[in-house]
Length: 363
Length: 258
Image (cartoon, rainbow over all chains, first blue to last red; front, side, top):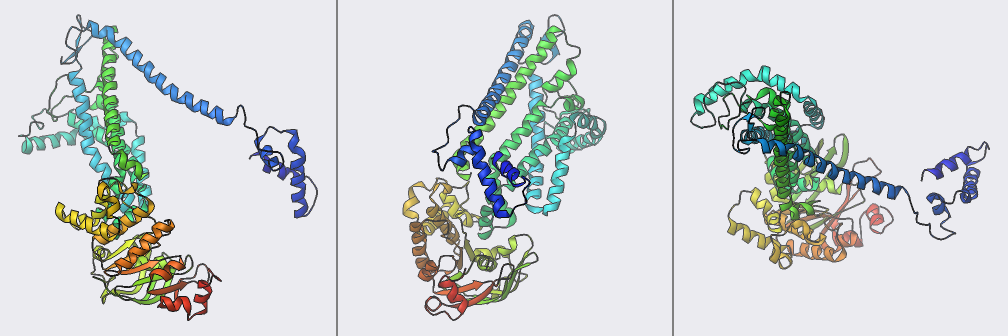
């Protein structure tokens, strides 16, 4: 494609001040005359196709090269995942052998001691609990914002606010962590005292001291995952076919009923994907939780009191002081985190797959 | 069940663009009225004004008066959702809800009206699907996705969904333009049956179809691109197609224009 227009343009500007009709015939004759010089380019073959049979298939071309590049990219992902898994296992196994406590149930982290004792239970528990609490707070808010931006706000305001939400995603997590540790900790302590006074009969709202708690970490996480979930679900909501929205309205639906009948069901797989991405970020979030959680090693459902820890935060907090076994122990905890995120992703796929019959016909 | 529609000086805008101007026309109950005319002449705009779907688009508005049995549907106190329940609409392209089964699609309107009882929904779904001549084809697979049906079946499913809420009037915006001739015939047959119960207004580009199915025909046209659409002639279908009163109508029908 690229060559033919260029050449005829060249012929046209060949220096002869001719009429349009002349110009065109000059260009055409130039093309015919030049064609045999480079018979391998496809455009010329096509140009001659009328007289000389069908163009020949090429032995090697952009098509094959591109196919090779994409294949290599696909294989690279598998290789990298396998390499990470091998690295984690190779480093973790010696430390796990040396561990004299039960890795799954022991509540503590003393891999530098002799004999080393460490357990993943409290860390895995804290990781999952903070992530789930964060989603519990963030998902309804995010979906509300996304629906507002896609279906209620005037278009200009929607675009502007969408941009601001995306900006929130660009704030580094260490900034969120510092903000949570130095500012949000006060209001959250007040909120904790209030929750304890009026809802103390629910076990999760236990006694203080209030400060760097699971609640604080979860709220900071919630703010961090909010923009991902919001902007992805907004995209999904905007893709709802107008025909379906109009069908609902024409049946006498109010705006909210239209959203419930047409938009939300259509966006369901997308919402699940967005929530799972948010969960992935929440599970792996390191520095913000290292700054806001209390770094204790006990399994406690009291989300108000000082304490809590997560696998990633623990790695960040303890890596500097770790010896050989200590590093192995941290890597073993990383392996567990890897497994948790894998399970989360597989679950998400399974949920989407179960409604395949409906979502596929939607496309 | 069927009601009469009066349009007086109906003018509709998209933002600053005037799409139709001063449309006056009366539709009698239990008849089929066809709106014909060249593309861009405002047939669909007028149709969408009748159930207040025009105003869904940003910046779109309607002036003039539209009444159904004497009640002004654009009155400030009128609930727009009630208007749309009374005046159902079938769209150009079949648009079943993709995430819903056949059954769920048919009862979607009833669900919106707050009907929850399974027995009532079952009965209404069968009644609507029978009325849409679709029951025998889908009765064994009501739980399957509505979007898995053929185009013609999907359109009849949409008609079933529209009539399940028992409207007074059914508007059809080129309902057969995305369908093959056999499915088109099935929908045309259906219109004959439906007019026993409903007032039907259909926009169509197919003049044979207008001649076959309608009792009255309204011919819309525009002077040139950018001008608002106007109602040129409105009369019995037979008269329009055999002995039109206006030169423009005759030109359009005989294929000399549009």
